[in-house]
Amino acid sequence: MPSAEPPGRPPDTIAAVATPPGRGAVGIVRVSGPLAPAIARRVLRRLPQPRVATLMTARDEQGEALDRGLALYFPAPHSYTGEHGFEFQGHGGPVVLQSVLAACVNAGARLAEPGEFTRRAFLNGRIDLAQAEAVADLIDAATQEAARLAVRSMCGEFSAAINALVAQLVELRALTEAMLDFPEEEVDSLHRDDAAARLAGVRAALQDVLSRSRQGSLLRTGIHVVLAGRPNVGKSSLLNRLMGEDRAIVTPVPGTTRDALRESIQIEGVPLVIVDTAGLRVPSDPVERLGIERTQIELAQADLVIAVFEAGEPHASLEALPEGVTRVEVYNKVDLAPGFVPPAGALAVSAMTGAGMDALKGRILAEAGWRAAGESVFLARERHLRALQQAATHLQAAADELRRWELFAEELRLAQAALAGITGEVTADDLLGEIFGRFCIGK
Ligand SMILES: Nc1nc2c(ncn2[C@@H]2O[C@H](COP(=O)(O)OP(=O)(O)OP(=O)(O)O)[C@@H](O)[C@H]2O)c(=O)[nH]1
Ligand SMILES: [Mg+2]
Image: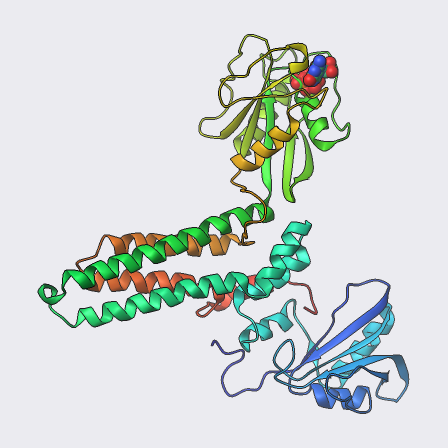
């Protein structure tokens, strides 16, 4: 476990207002550290019974009452941070809360930095790093689905999956260390097959965690979808249909949309940014030319392009679409072309009647990598995906070294180290600074 402070020096005691700034029914001042009981005795005049909500008056040094509210004392190690701590739940006004905070500082606390309480919880082993990140993810969650997954990671589900992988690797490493002591010719094929089978098992389990993490990360980053096509095919009408309201201007005049218009929606809880663009053709005036340039910029950033065509019209090719970007071909206005059958892989829709829209939504999610709901996915961060990918690369390398046991063992060790970084068993200080610096103060 990494240590919180330079060795030998006890940590100082921190204090912060834990509720958001502004007026509210209740405001909370939080204190954590070795001096917390002494500070409570000074500010509240006595220490409340552990874990019993007690109505008390907070006072300044002159004994003047600052506020009356509920005090809670959590002796170490049974607190959020693992240290002695107390909370004062008073009235949620900025002035009153600052005065209670000031009284705590006068009594020996210092102001906490963003995320410092959670950082201490991590450093004291109350939670691991992935759980600490999930605390921030829960507070920042923009959709219900993201919040649900963040709670699960906070409770340790993601960490448990990582720890299970690490445990499998530890076992395999122990087996390998034993083989290292024998000359190659004495390692019989039975042992080699055993190692190969176990390695295959870990790799499959890792791939499973990786794919669930990739899926979950979509919930964090969202999917960037761009509608593109020739003028007048109904791109703006499709945007309005997907939004369920009239956001974009629709007219029968080709070249209506000039500027890229972006809107946020959710499909099955997955956040999407949908961009409506100017129709692609040889521009007829400078404004349209600028609009089409913007379309190109949007296309270059797209996770997914919806290439829109008109049902029944001769198939116009869209050379303008960048190579390699995932695309879904959609034939709009099927209401005007009865009996129209779209080419294989394409969808037929009508922005006017709504026909085919559910299939389109399902397709957008599927192309972006989202699988059926209900499967448990992890709200992974970019950092987690990188570590998992790194571990996978080392295990691949190990699979290529099934005769050179030293190299095999080394790759296993590296894979394990990559995974351990996720839960923070080994962590650099600057990484901690980056993670916890983004928290709110008081958390
Ligand atoms: N019948 C029918 N008409 C549609 C449908 N979708 C769009 N339209 C009509 O087609 C015309 C063009 O629609 P828009 O949504 O403005 O097309 P656009 O692709 O955004 O066009 P630009 O912005 O000019 O590139 C409008 O008159 C729409 O009412 C559809 O599904 N069926
Ligand atoms: Mg338009």
